[in-house]
Every structure is written in structure tokens, then in C-alpha cells.
Image 1 (cartoon, helix red, strand yellow):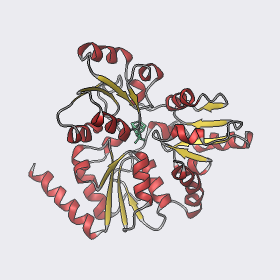
Image 2: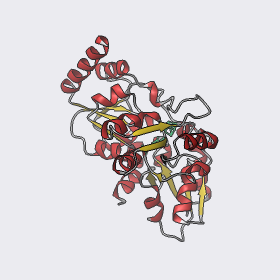
Image 3: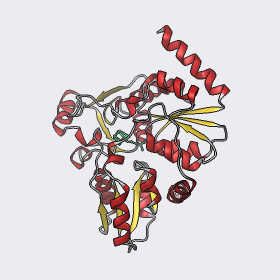
Length: 309
Ligand code: 13P
Ligand code: SF4
């Protein structure tokens, strides 16, 4: 406990001396979220990165989120506690097949989920996050064919919401959200019959069909906090418990474990630790380094997304 308090103090001192901001995703360890200047979903964090005016962004999330922050801040230093903090969606979608698709279908509109590499973003027409994917797809003229990549579950959800037929969907998936078993949700509902069910749109259609609310991490939290209900079954990464319990201390939240790890934690997000955060603020490594040309090209679809209301 004493060691943790000392590391937290060191991080606070480093934040001041480095003129750093600490941006943390909801899926980070509670001790990281406690120290963060901003805790948010991927869209909120991208917006905060865009509006930042200090010297260093310490990004406690996964690498693609930090790449987005760097593309929006070419002159600033962006560090991540662990270089291996990737994402199964990023890994499902390398840039070569996207380039080949672009060459074969120059008239199609490529809508990329923010959970992609910066190279894939640079090949895309517009980005989206789980929070604004429906609005982004609705902003595209109806006669245009859309390629939505890489999350098949989010893509299918957007297609159901928009009714868009001319939409092709990449076949990537989130290893956390796609593996929540329906039978465990049935069991949880049998145990807590009055509970509301909330889920992230990266979950399967079978899970989403059983929900009371579907939304991004921040949207799920806001919905539970403002709902009249007292009990919730939550189908997303366990890190959201931090904000749920802080903002709605009297309510009860039940998490479903997925098949892979028998937990609901993202193995990539959880690579970041308080010690690694202290070290990256000390050494300013691992640092996101991108060519000026790649950042310039990636900024175009990022800024198009940020302009969609
Ligand atoms: P949000 O856009 O809700 O932050 O989700 C990001 C993510 O990686 C979900 O698994
Ligand atoms: Fe990627 Fe899934 Fe982890 Fe989100 S929870 S960062 S989509 S692997």
C-alpha cells in the first residue's frame, strides 16, 4: 500500500514537471483511473487529445488510441505505459488488404472503426467510434457503398440501426466482447430478474437482442447512473466498474465473464500498470513516433469524424 502511494506521488510530480496530461480509458486499472486527468471512452479521449496544449500526453489505453492522439498532436510527445497494449481488432485488419480493396473499389466509402492501426486510418475516408458509428454511417450519401471495418458485431449493429443495405462488413472481432456467452446472460437474468441489461455494441447480435441499452463505455455508464433502476447486468470490460461505483454508489452491477479467460478484462488494456506509467513519464518511452506524411493522411478521416455531430 505504501509503495503504491509513493508511485502515485511520483506520477503526480512527473505530470507537473513534464507538463503532461494523463488520459485514461475506462478499461484501465482503478489505480490508474484515480490519477487520470480525464477518464473517458475512445471518442472523448480523442477530443481531449485534440484540445490539449501542454507538452506530453501519457495515454493509458491501447496503442491505436495513442496513435490517434499523436496524429492530432504532431509536435507533442505521446507515451503509452506498455508498447504491447494492442487490440484484437487492430490485429484483424492489416493495411495491405485494405489498400487492395481501395484499388478494386475506388468508389466505395471506407468507414474505419477507431480500433485500427494508423496505417489503416490513412487509407480510410472517415473514422467512427462505438459512440458515433450510426451517425457517421448515416452521414454518407445513401447511394454510396460502404465498407465498414474491422468489427463485424459493431458493423452488424450499425447496419440494423441504419437499415443500410449497401454495406460490406470486415470480419474482425473483439476477443473480450464477442465471447460473452448467451447462457451466462440467461443465468445472470435468472439470478437478478429485476436487473437491466446494458452492453457494448462489440457484443454479438444474440447478446444485443437481450439488452435494455446498447452504447459506448461512457454512454453505458451515463445510462446506468441516470436510470431509475438499481441493478444492472453489464456486458463490457470490468474497468467501467470504477466510474459506475463512484457515480452510482447505491446501485449494484453484475459483470458477465467471457469464455476466453473466465473474466471480463481486456488483456491488452491491462498490460498498463502504475509502475509502467511512472516509468514512461520518467523516460518518455515507449513513445509514439509516426512520419509527418502518415499523420497528415490519418488526420483527414479523424477530423471528418470529429466534425460529425
Ligand atoms: P469505446 O469506444 O466505448 O471507448 O470502446 C473502445 C473499445 O476498445 C471497446 O472495446
Ligand atoms: Fe480491443 Fe476488445 Fe480490448 Fe477494446 S476490449 S481494446 S476492442 S481487444
